[in-house]
Structures are given as C-alpha cells and as structure tokens.
Image (cartoon, rainbow, N blue to C red):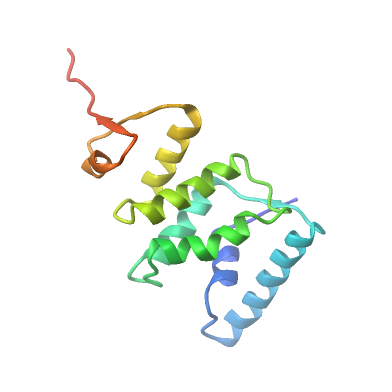
Length: 144
C-alpha cells in the first residue's frame, strides 16, 4: 500500500505548467487510474486532504471555489483503491464546504466529524459556526 502526499493529488487535479509538471501529472494520473481499477491500494491522512483543499482554494495558488475543489477531489476520494478511514466523513465535509463556502475546509471537516459522532455543539470562538443549521456553537466558560 502507498501513502500519498498532497502533491500527488495536486498533480492529478491541476493543469501542468511545465514539462516536468506534465510528466508528474501523467504519472499521478496513472496511479489514480490504477487505484480506480483496484490494481493498487493507497491511503493518506486527514491533514493531506485538508492541505489539498487549502492549496486549491488559496488565492496564492489556484483560487478555486469550494464547489470546484469538491468537484475535482470527490472522484479521487471515491476510488475503490484509495483506502481512507472515515471516507464518508471527507465526502460530507466537501458537501458542507460547498454549501457554506465561507467556512474553511478544516471547519467543514470538524462539522462532518461532529455529525458522524452525533455531536451538535461545537466549542469554538469562531463565529462562522453561528449561522449553520443543525449546529450550535459554545465558548468555553472561564472557570477558576
């Protein structure tokens, strides 16, 4: 089994800018095609999925809208050869991020985990959570 870094996803998800990028994109795409056919297996960690979303969304890099990031990343996450713990949670996070693009992907991922765990209250100072249906936000109490 392979452990994938963010740049493998990125090479498969964005247009190559140089000859070296084209070669990497072709190799990464080939790997994902083998994963789709079940010829190989790979995994990654949650931080890598978050990094891919961050880079694709970043104005300094690709400046894609959350819906576009989700549209590109979802097919890779769904590959049968890509083994991810809580795969449905990542997909739910992409859905939440698309529905509420003011959120950071990491916040959408937190909410997706909250749903999976049956938790409806997030403890945070981030007021972005205040306008989400089905979730409440609380701040920690200052107890001495």
